[in-house]
Image (cartoon, one colour):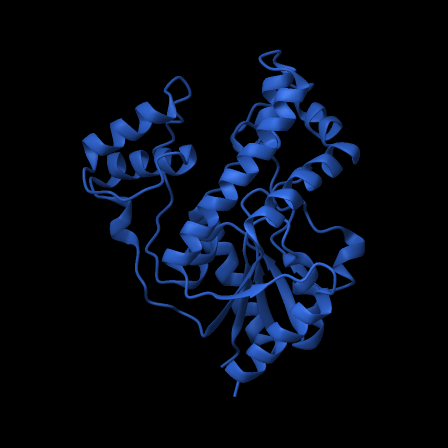
Length: 295
């Protein structure tokens, strides 16, 4: 049976670079596991792999939806499993790459998901109030109370099914999988995140956001995704550009912390330290681990 390789970790640790190296070595095809990168046009802010970076390796589930199209974890599960099965049938190695932990779990574990019919977005309710609303419905739920999108999903799921969203989760893996995580010292990571945000702005992030804003598009990906929601607040004249940039950096750092918490509790990851000055060392170390796991 073909083993699936997962490459995950917070932003700015080298996931894209590692994925290309592993795809070359193990005859792989890459599958996006990032909730923002499914959308067309959200390129700079999501650090989406470029055509040049792909190096002619097949990439799947990038740029498959317009920003005004509905796309949920249920849709991702259907799409990812179809792609995984097709890659395995072609005797190649599926490589899932990205930092959206729920996407990875929904694709690879025996999650029983159904298409969501309850669409309430609770736009006029604060995140704290959403959490309190959820606790009234599902008093024993364990959830990140700062993750607005997840809170909304949990509330809508409970109202639709009269059951906790946690009840559809399982630790049963459907595929033989190797979980690779890239990490680095927290101070180094935060410095990399800050510099990446500055580079995104230099490369046209504000113009990318403005192209949607000027068309009056205010859909979930733009109002929820880090790098987009902060600049929408700036364009709405709610905060200054300097505040927006600071908020992108701060929210990216907080998101990285939440990612570590999720990965460490939810996935059996083998962590590798990113050597930024000699990334080949990191690649070689990961390849040795995979070769051992494949014996």
